[in-house]
Image (cartoon, rainbow, N blue to C red):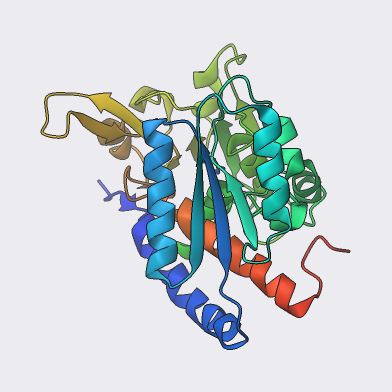
Length: 301
Ligand code: GUN
C-alpha cells in the first residue's frame, strides 16, 4: 500500500517565514515595523494559548505586537472604544480580536468596528464581500493557510470535489469560497456540510479533498472517506487523559485509521494550526506595505 503523505504545516510555514524576510527587511529599512494589536477577552485557555503563540512568533521575527487583555464581563462600548483607538494608532497595521467572544458581546458589531484596512483576519463584511466577489483584500488566515499547504505540495483542487464540514465565518465558509474561485489552484466543485446536513457520510465519501472544520474530536472515521482522499484537518481539540499534561490534542479526524485510506493528510498538531499564524504574519506584513506605499492592494479597485 502506498504511504500516506503527511502535509506538514511546520515545513510550509518555515518556507513562508523565509520568503517574508526580505519584505520585512525592506519595511524595517523604511522605518516601519509591522505591528499587530491582539484583543483577548476573558480567560478561555485555548484562546490564551493561541494568542501567546502569535505574540511569540511576532517577537521571533522582530515584529511588533501588543495584546490587550480585557475582563470577561467588559461592556460592549468599552471594547468598541478600544478598537476605535487601535484604528487610529499608527503603530498597528493589523487588529485581531480573538474569537470566540463572551455571549454578551455581539461578534458582528465588534468585527464591523475594525477598520477593514487593518482587518488582518479578513472577517469584516467588506473583506468577506471582496473575497466572495473574487477580488480578495485580506483572506482569513486558516483558509489561506490551507490553500498554501495544498499549493506547496502541488495538490491542485481544480476539477476536484472539495467537501467542507463546518460553515463558520472563520474557516468553513471562506475556504469553500476560495476553493471555488475561477483561478489557478482553486476552481474546485465545493460542498459545505453542517449540523443541518442529514447524511454527512453521503457527501464525505464523494470527497477528493475533505476539510474537517467543525470542532468535534475525531469525528471523521475511515468508513466515511474514499481511498486516496486528501484530508485537511482543521480541528484542535483537547481530550483529557491521564498523560503528564492531563490532555492530548486531537483533530476532527480519526487520524490513525483515516490515514490508512488517505493519500495525504495534515497532522494535529503541526498541520493547519501553524499555518494560521504564518498567514497572520503575512497579512500583517501586507497591511504594513499597503500603508507605506499608500498604494493599492487587491480589492481596492
Ligand atoms: N479563533 C479561532 N481561530 C481564529 C482566527 O483565525 N482569528 C481569530 N480572531 N479568532 C480565532
